[in-house]
Image 1 (tube, rainbow over the protein chains, first blue to last red):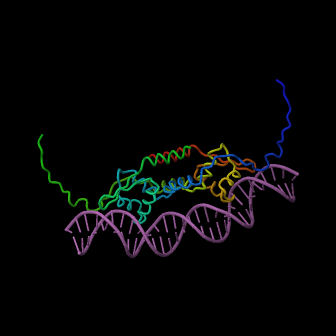
Image 2 (image 1 turned 30 degrees about the horizontal axis):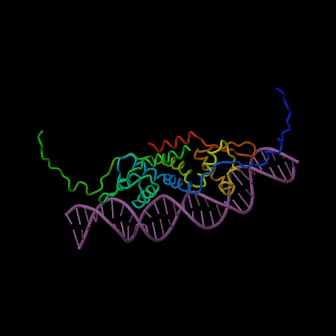
Image 3 (image 1 turned 90 degrees about the horizontal axis):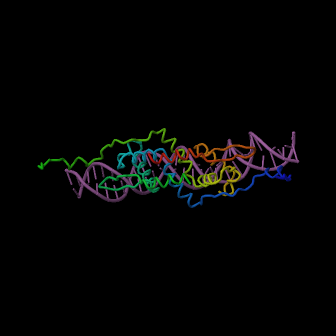
Length: 114
Length: 114
DNA sequence: ACCTCACATTGACACTCGTCAATTTATTTG
DNA sequence: CAAATAAATTGACGAGTGTCAATGTGAGGT
């Protein structure tokens, strides 16, 4: 097979940064996804979440002592977790029982493998 | 089969919140996990991450335009993602090429299914 | 009705975080 | 060495966040 010498410009074609075509997540999608991860980005919230995930049903009054935070603080965190769709609260009598939303967890896990 | 009537105390045993034995994530573990989720809790960081994940290797200069942020801001975000172990940067010449750490993503995904 | 208890809400404070202009560091090229 | 470029660092500012005391709400229990 014949060989042919080709004059290729190598010296100065890479000395400056070239644009690159790549796919970017949309702003709106990023906002929504960020809100979910944000709910899990606080140590206290993670511990509250692990408490709820460990039992079948946990009421708010059982969360304050383990995480050593005040009642308004715990209420603040459960609201953020609930807004992110990670937990749901059912009010029975004076108590609110929390449980995790398994389907939401699967949804979040899939976001990491795209 | 015989039936027997049993006198059960129902009235006042549940009128106050009872402590509940449950497993709590440790503070140190919560801090570490929170740092990872925190890295993914910002919209701009998520879009940068998606850019890096879409290509095999992406240099920092290819990140500024798509997310419309300044160079110091992009550098700030890549550092946070790198500290969380989600991406690694290899410096070749004047450029730093970023790529995602797949094993770290698997690790994070498993955290959601415990 | 009154009191108690579980939980939500408000307001205020300190602290963290995202952002960019300016500067510095490191590397390549002339 | 000098000029140019990629990227990290510093400093500063406004916005957002975690925290708790005080208060509000609503559902039992006596």
